[in-house]
Amino acid sequence: MSELKLVSWNVNGIRAILKKDFLKDVADLNPDILCLQETKAQPEDVQSALETVPGYEFYYNSSKARKGYSGTAILTKTKPLEVIYDMGIEEHDQEGRVITTEFDQFFLVTVYTPNSGAGMKRLDYRAEWDVAFRDHLMALDEKKPVVVCGDLNVAHTEIDIARPKPNYNKTSGYTQTEIDGLDNILEAGFIDTFRQFYPEEVKYSWWNYKFKARDRNVGWRIDYFLASERLKDQLKGAEIHNEYFGSDHCPVSLQLAID
Image 1 (cartoon, rainbow, N blue to C red):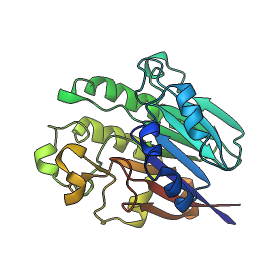
Image 2: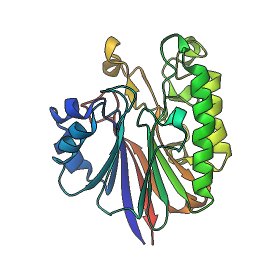
Image 3: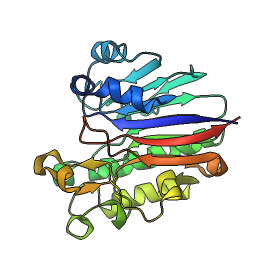
């Protein structure tokens, strides 16, 4: 058995984070596979940015609908067997939110789940997305186990948000509709890996820039690694890396044992 280190990070703009300590941080984290969300750049800009990260094959999916918006990328030391972009549903495939990579023993999916937006104006769309994304994961899981990571834009339970009561059903990312969406993925046969190792630990992965929330640790845990239940015995560790800056999110990681 060997171990793979998987890292996921919403970088809040690949060009912006490269001006900070991103390359040093990636070298320090030294992931076998690095998944990024919110690259916020057109294909040529993502390409030139990722070329500065040594030692990785990389794949990216940029928004077709709006320039400089959304977007995902995967950097990997091992070339995947196949790379699939989006979910094959035109309505959901305009913003570069999903990349699926197939490896020998598992699928790895990175996702930047749509935010329900100011005033929750996209909440109905978000509910439709959650169903489609769950179906995508279930279809993959029929073939081989799945690891899914990224910014799921939902705090799952009260322990995952610093101020649950004032935000519940009033703030995007902590409505019952969004919580139900994640519940439905977990009930379809997936594990929240951080909670597998730390069922009661209070730790966050996102802080609002506007209110200097990170200084006060008034945060949300909205970045996840989920894994097929049959990978349970291969999960060797899951962490939230609060020590890394550069974005309003911090990286999260998963250690996975493979043959």
